[in-house]
Image (tube, rainbow, N blue to C red):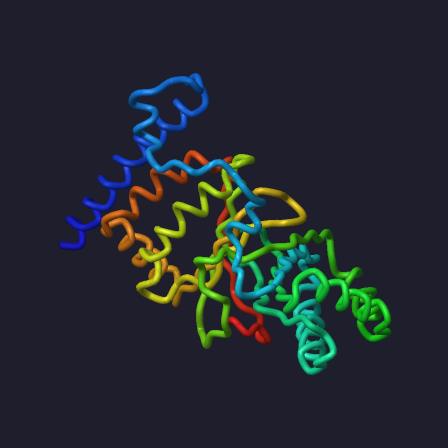
Length: 278
């Protein structure tokens, strides 16, 4: 029974990957004036842009701004880094003067090794971010933390994000869970099209409460999307993802969004002890 189900899933996946490959080639080489089969292949039209995609795709009822940090840590310093991060984040959460909170902190398990990932939320948007930055620059304890942390890092980078209006608001979770951060570098100009398709597709990925949050970049690498998922373990991840392929409509989403992607990456992450997302 299980073998038959797996074979059915694989056949559906292969069928749509073949269609996506054909569509990708057509998208690259067909003339813009071409009609016929190419027009029908991309039947879901996106209206001409009337506003910035940040205004069209983000939540209107909140003014939250998110920051994601990627810290590449010296292997021998990982334990000390995690402990130091724990102490500082707890201190910031205790102080109501700072309009920021850590949503989650993880160590990468599969993907780029010896890496820490932090997701922050600023309640109040850019003004809250600037207020927090100003206060931290006057906080001698935090400045000492940054100096000590710099000794442990190989490199670091960050991005400012907005959340998609149709995704869940990230909320604390009890564990144990593993988390997958799937990052997509999209073709420039395709963010609205991506959002249109995922606004319909997200319903296929809610059955096991696996959807944590969906974001797109505003500053940093542009046209980047991050989808954050939670699973009990790797086996649960595989079963949940395979089940999506059995739902009518999921394959259509894959078919239409794959040609929009330039590059994609998956990280499997383990929550740090102090992370609100466990």
